[in-house]
Length: 261
Image (cartoon, rainbow, N blue to C red):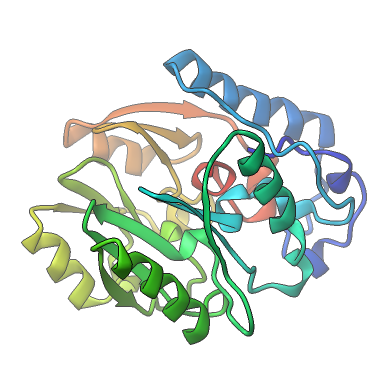
């Protein structure tokens, strides 16, 4: 994770795709600390990206800067020019804790970590769009296929990342915004034994990013506060839900899954 540093203290929100609402910097940091505490209380070890460029407020969204595989990490190349360079410091943090770096997306490739979602050990979905081009997709696909993984291509409708519209709750449940997930991906998930749960509220999908949760363990998720209809639906399907207030982080147009690599 990257605890918000100097990079969030002064910036042009339009240039970095944040909302126009002013950010309470200290509250943002406290909220980030609260998320980390949920993880540590659950028994996870949290590692921080200690260094970062001072003009990169999006660096809090660590998910985009790496993609983890069973053999090690793939370092990404962000699709948004205003984020280029952030990935260097994620690579530094990974090296420090001994995580193998398998590949860095290179050349004209673009790929961000949230452009991929594991379905199971041998199946992964990788999406193309404004944050992942064909070159980046092929580089990731080649690396995954080398380790025996079948890669499914996905072209989301009007969305930059997979985790904004599709996210696994457990080994057999997935939450989706059905209007934006292509049929062939839904069909593949059903054949894999997944129960497809649909977000019941467009407001919660787009404003409070209901799909952008973190699974702490199968059927136990951490979700941002402010998604009561989605929470009610998931509860009826036996999902254990913890919530946390991340109102300031949401102003960066990202949520829990985004800030957790």
